[in-house]
Image: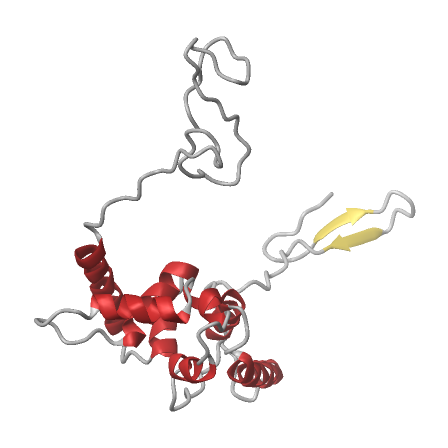
Length: 236
């Protein structure tokens, strides 16, 4: 094989015909982006137009059905919409919580349990307890609702600001910690309920640790438990 100097191709004889064959020694240029930067979609890009159309339809569906969707589904849709490279649409004049209170006006409406893990009368009673202070102004119902909603569904502060009408994410965070502080001050010193050791319940069982299956044993006077183990394992 005879190699040419410079950038000329290398020459070699073909073993079959003996005629010279030319092999290009230049490396192919990589089509990868050397700067490793993502290309931005132009306003007239067809993909961007399709994303905008799909996002508009999804927002319309969410605004129409957000009072009846389970919170985890509506939060998931909001998260997906916020991740799109599209400018967010303008929010409505009324907040989600204001529309929810007007819609779920009955005391036995199950949506209160779905959203806040308590009934409407319990919510009103808790709001009255936390607002019973002459030194501080009454607690807004939206602040209590936002706190319960975050504790129940792990909602972000940006979602709370949008749903409950806070001016900014920092205001939503401040309201959350204010309500948590009030709950600690008003309800943190209540006596713990005493366990009921009545025969109707499991012996010496005060509660549940979770959903895992565990062996339940109690110690008799002879230092044996009902499951037949020679040494007691204690209580679960």
